[in-house]
Length: 131
Image: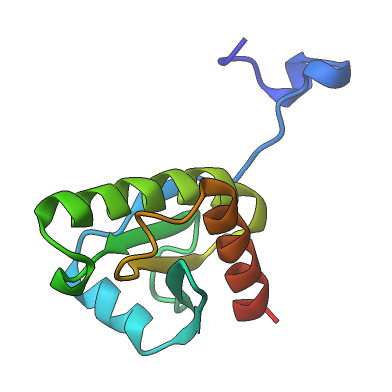
C-alpha cells in the first residue's frame, strides 16, 4: 500500500502528500534560524525562518539543540529525544513547506513536562511564528 500513489487508490485509503521532514546538520543553517522569527514557551523555544529562493524550497527542515544549561549529557539527550518526537508529530500538520525550524530545549522543563503539555506548547509556538 505504501508504494501506491493517490491516483491508484480511491476513497478513505487515499494517501495524502505531506511535506517531507529532513534534519538540519550544518551550523550555518542553525545560525540563520537563530536570527529569524522565534517564540518561546514554557517547554521549548522555537526558531523559524522561510528559506530564500536560492535554497532548496521543498520540504520542512528541522534541527534540535540543547545547551549545557539543560543539564548533563543524559538530560540533554532526553530533552532532544522528546523534541524529535514532538517535531515528528506536530510539524507535518502545522509546519510549512520551505521553512526551517530549530527546537531548543529548556533547562529543567523540556525533559520533565508532561508530553501533552509539550505538544501544546509546540503547536502554540508554531501558530505564533506563522502569524
